[in-house]
Image 1 (spheres, rainbow, N blue to C red):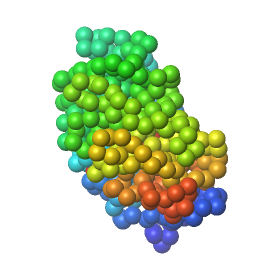
Image 2 (image 1 turned 90 degrees about the horizontal axis):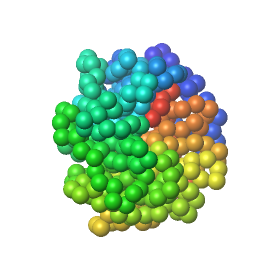
Image 3 (image 1 turned 60 degrees about the horizontal axis):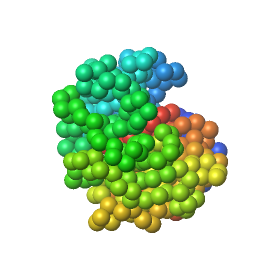
Image 4 (image 1 turned 135 degrees about the vertical axis):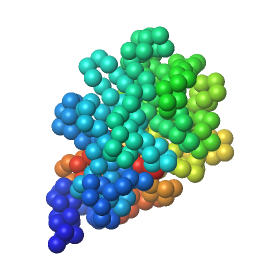
Length: 325
């Protein structure tokens, strides 16, 4: 009976109005999401003040996630590769903070860096898109400073804050570390703070950014929307992009010189918004979709072409999901 109730709950959340096949991934047992080691972190909340971070382990119950924060104002959660910490942005009025919280559900969030730290970054605001280094010791995030958009790096304990040089005067979006921890693949633009036509490789040692792909025209892509994610082995990059009929998840191949080619559309439902991709290993992508009428987390093979893969519902009712651990 318990298994049946879980199936009904997930199916109801998805709506199952889509025409492409949708399976249901039941996961394992474990109340309150189970003890977290690997899985999805995400945001729930109907208003800015009620937005909090939740987690569901791969072996946990997706209908009963573990709540990690209670203070509200949470955006853009990301989990470290060891699965022990979540970094996220907290917004409280005009104050933006980069915070971390343990995935045990038993600790309080701590502030790594705040927009009120005027001595370190006067005029810095609009924090977004944090990402952990592969060893979990540093976090890179995007911020605005005056009319400029810059990348910032800070140690996870709050020490060593620095703004990366922006010699190309790019607008930066989401970033993702390369496996060696020495560089980033970033969404970027020469023209817009919110719509990104370029993929950039950023050298963390000197901040030098080089264009490694222009996504416009790549299998229907127009501009990158919310996230860039490098696969754990560094061979692929996933991102979401607007098309003429909704938004899709795309995957490109990264060569030895960090150039990106063979960009292919993975999801393909017309009129559907697919966004926030992250890697579940090197062969599968988790992503957010409103297919079925609400925002749920699904997974699909990274080798799927234009919706040919089997889409599996993983977690209902979630925003800004990220997979890790």
